[in-house]
Length: 161
Image 1 (cartoon, one colour):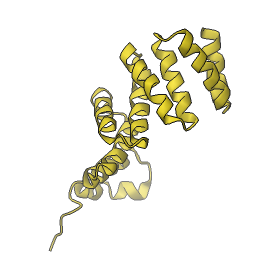
Image 2: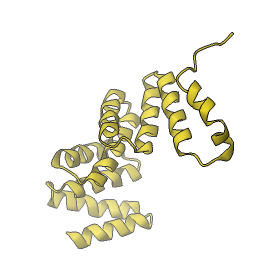
Image 3: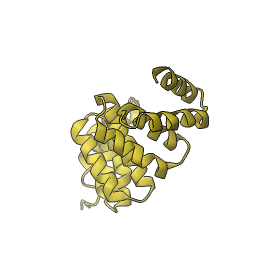
């Protein structure tokens, strides 16, 4: 199994997504209780743009128990996949779990802001994006205005006269 999994990962690195997916599907059929294989299989469906097929593999991988790093990726992947499928509430629940477990993961927060947008929580989405921006940017011009951006991030609807 390890050799086949390594082969599938190498194919993915070389952008041979369909061939990688084919191997991972076979591995998931042969080892349905292997959380890592399920996660990699889900990821491979996402890369092919077949999000609906990815969902059960993500869900199974999370249920079976993943290493911390893989769980971080699986929660991001599943939350994003739910969002693209229009399952915004499931996406929100998944991202909130991801943020609780991995509070410093800005990618999870950024993808969560997209879900907030889809849930018509535009102010909250912008606040989160702006905070991610000022916490991670190295752009000198944005850094010059970090204090102001931070101040206004949760006051976008206020008008000062």
